[in-house]
Each structure stands twice: as C-alpha cells, then as structure tokens.
Length: 294
Image 1: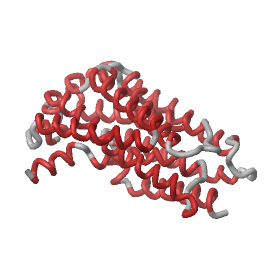
Image 2: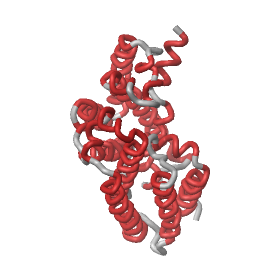
Image 3: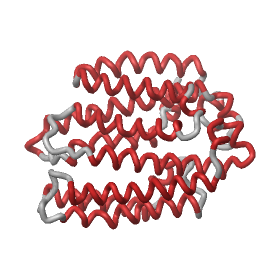
Image 4: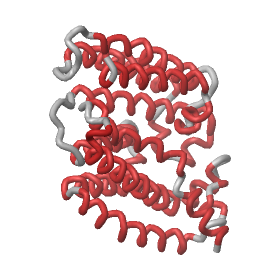
C-alpha cells in the first residue's frame, strides 16, 4: 500500500507543481503581499494548493492516456504507470477521488476560481486527447494553461493595479519554454520522435529555432514595455532595472536548449541549473524591493 501511495505521488509529478507559482502573480504584482493583508495571501496560497492537486490529476490522466507511448520512451518508460509500479485502476480511482475534493474546495474559495479551474481541466483533457497532436496548437495549449493560472490568481483577490501586459508576457514566455521543450524532444528522440509524439512530425530543428528567436525577442520587448508603461509601477521607471535579469534568463535558457540539449523537462532545468536559479532569485528580490521596500 505504501509503495502504491509513493508511486501515486511520483506520478502526480511534484516537481512540476512549481509551474503553479504563477498563480501568485496577481498578488505580487498588484502589491498585496504583506502581514496586513493576510486574507488575500491565504486565499492565493489555498488556490496554489488546489491547482497543485489539479495538476496532479492532469498528469495522472495524461499518463493513463499515454501509457503505451510512454513505454517506448527512454525516460518516460520509468514513470509509475508506464512501468507498472502504479496500476492504472489505482490511478483512475485517485483521479476520481481528487476531483471530488478539488472542485468543492475551489468553489468555496470563489465560484470564479472554480470556473477557471474547470477550464484548466477541460483544456488539459482536450490537450491529452487531441490538441497535443497538432503542431503549434500543442504549444499554444501549454501557454494557455499558464494564462489560466494567472487568471486563477486574479479571481482570488480584489485586483486594483494588475497590468494586462503580464498576460502578454506570460503567454510569450510559456510559448518560449514550450517550443524549447519540443526542440529538446526532437533532438533527444531523433528518428523515434514521431512514434512518441505525433506533433513532432510538424517540426524541425530549424523551424523551432526560428520560433524560439521570434518568441524570445517578443518576450523581451513585451516585458520591457511593461516595465515603463504599466500604470501601477513607480513613476521613476526603476522597474526597468529588472530587464537585465529577464534578458539573461532567456539567453541562459536558450543556451541550455540549443548548446546543452536540455529543455525536454523544463522543471529539471529550473531545479538543476544554478545560474538560472540565481537569476530568478535576483529578479524576484529586485521586484520585491521595488514594490515593497523602496
């Protein structure tokens, strides 16, 4: 029983729950972090936990649907469902049980939050069944998942100064990571790529490099425009000091994808690359200082 439970947790991919930190964007960028504002902070933290559970459900559903393809993949064949460590019936039971908890809890937090959570689940079901097989649409679906996370955070607090530019930046940055993931898969799987993921037949290394160049440039431009045009930022444009961190982060990730062959699992890059970790920490510390200290 304990081995099955551990396999279930592994199948829910806790490392990838880090993506759900995007739900805090509304709280941070609307300047609502503080000990005198515990209500919104607790509601957002609760929403983060709910989205982590919902993400786990999505990963279980994906692994159940992809079990045969995963068994032919050099790394994914080690996943609990594909390897047989977690029986498929147990995974299905866990999906059903988690959904019975997740959506009532989401509705208690906010009906609008529950609606966004439902949209996220439906998007991922559509992705697992159809969208992941369509080139370009597959990556746009991933990007939409991040946008929905941002929207989920907005539904949990009373937003007064959140800039729409952050939706644009979130979309572009997630497209950048998504195309980097496809490039890494194409390099890693080589001639077996089409057998694992049908959408990879619509990509080539050269095409994905062009996509990465376009998306990285527009991400930098959009973020730069946000730092001096968003209405809720300091009038002295000090937010522009965060641009170099974004530049380096994008260039570092592109280096890891194109020169080191990383990117197939973006969460592994995040947890293993020290320069990227330091850049993100410095970027976050600078934003916190601008918003809450000076």
